[in-house]
Image 1 (cartoon, rainbow, N blue to C red):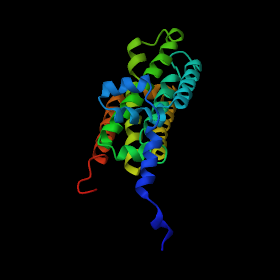
Image 2 (cartoon, rainbow, N blue to C red; image 1 turned 135 degrees about the vertical axis):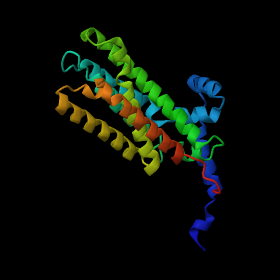
Image 3 (cartoon, one colour; image 1 turned 120 degrees about the horizontal axis):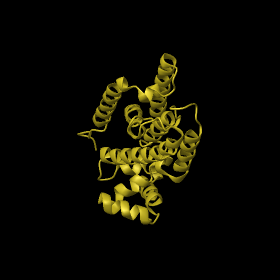
Image 4 (cartoon, helix red, strand yellow; image 1 turned 60 degrees about the vertical axis):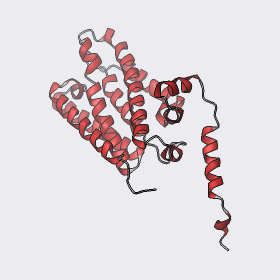
Length: 235
């Protein structure tokens, strides 16, 4: 008789579910549950790897260093760092092998697409807010930089790199690959524009790049939408 025949897989799965769900919801989770109208979706949101406290602390430290590090007048490095930090965070919204609630979330009545969308929007919003705060801290040292440019310019490349990272992560089922793709593309673009213009921030300030950024973001979103479509006929 095979030893594996004695394993009660149903009981194992119940134990896994109990391990994930045994924690009592805190105030933040209860608020999220009311806003989202789904306790399960709120739990899935707050177990997102890139929304956990250690990750948020690390992101805040990196963005703070970027705000303090200045290369020259009109070239705040935070504009280049904020998209990179958000790109890595957004890739880890998709967490097979990393997210303790991933397998359980796949069996929830809530669709995988809705969970991923909720997580992605939350991670992007948090990173955008942190980036805005860090950028605002550099305004006094860069009086020549317009407020509209400060609050808008780096959001487009952030959106594009995040969409690319998430599309790759979902397609190849690897958040590490998604982060590498998004971050690698951003670094290559920054280096290319720096060599051409001798300014680090050209990848952010060049208006000619805004349309390509929007195109990349749209294509990435379409890929994610297609890759997370419901699979008919599967149990």
